[in-house]
Length: 451
Image (spheres, rainbow, N blue to C red):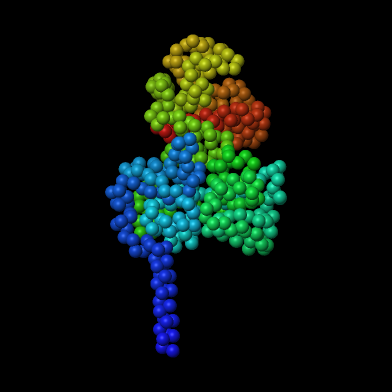
C-alpha cells in the first residue's frame, strides 16, 4: 500500500513537472529578464526582429522588392531608433505567441487583432488600423453554392477558418446570434488569410472570413471574390510585443501616435488598401521613385512652383501622369510634351511641340496656377486641388456645368468627392473621375516621399 502511494505521488510529481515546464515555456515572459529583450537590448544589438507571415499586408517580396504594409511601418520605426529591421517568417500562426515569448523575435506583425484572450500572453502597441471582419465568397456569377447577402443565411453553411483566430470566435458568436448552427471547418495556423482567399477563388472552399483590409489589399489578385458582407464591428489591429518590454511599448506607441498623422502613413494606406484600381499604380510609383528624386526635372518643378507659392508636387504628379517625364512625346489629338498640352492650349501659354522642357514646365505651372485661381471659392485646399486636376483633364466648362448640376441635385458644389464627382460619372463616365483619383494619389505619394 505504501509503495502504491509512493508510485502515485511520483507519477503526479512527474506530470506536474511536465505541465509546469510547458506552462513556463509558453509564458516565458515571466522568467526572461526585460534587460535581455527590451528596447535597450534591441538598440545595442542594432536590429529589431519582426515575426511575420507571407502576405501583402504584412511582408512579401515582389520581383525582389521587399514590401508589405506592416513591414513598411516597422521599417520607418526602426529608422527612427537607428536599428535595422530583420524579418523572421512564421511557418504556423498557432506558434506566433510562443515564438515571441521564446525571444525568437521582438514584434509580431501579422495583422494581429487585439483580443482579450491574446492579452493574457502578449502586450499590444497602439493600433494602427481598425477593420471589420468580412465574409469572403465568390461572386454570384462564379459558381458560389449560395451568394450570401445576410448573416442569417450562413445557417448550416460550411465556413473554413483558422481555429485560433478572431474569425473563429466571431463565427461562434454568430451562431448564438442567429440561433442556428454554422458548419466550421477548423484549420491550423498554416492557413493564412491569403491562402484561404486563394482557396475560395479556386473553388476549393466556398466561404471564409478575413479582415476587410486584407481582402481589399488582395482585391487586384482575386477579381472573382466578394468581400462586402460585414460580420463584425470594427476591431483593432496592432503589433504584438512581450509583456516585459515596457520600454519598447512606450517607444513604439509614441512613434505610432505621431506617424499616424503624417502624409507618409496616409500614402501607405492608399498604397495597400485602395483596391484593384490603384494598388498597382501606387506600387509602381513607389518603386520608380528611387528614394532620392522624382525626375531630372525636379529643380524646374520647384523653381516654377515657388513663383506662384504652390507645391511642386502638384505639377510633378500631372507630368508623371501625362507623359511620364518624356519631353517630346506626342499624344492623341496633337497633345504634346511633358504637360501634354493641346495645340490651342500650348499657343495660349506660348509653347509648342519643340519647346524646351524648361519652357514646357514654365507654361504648365502658369496653367495650373490659372486653374487654381478659377476655383478660389472652394474653401478646402485638397478639394480645390481635385477641381484643378479635373479642369486640367477636361477643361473648365464641363466641370463648371457639373458643379451647377450638382447644386441642383442637392449635392455640395464645393466638394469633389461623392458630390460633383458623382454628377460627372453619370454624365461623362468614369474617365475624368478616374484621372482625378489617380493624379491626386500621385500628388499624395510625392508629398509623402519628397516632403
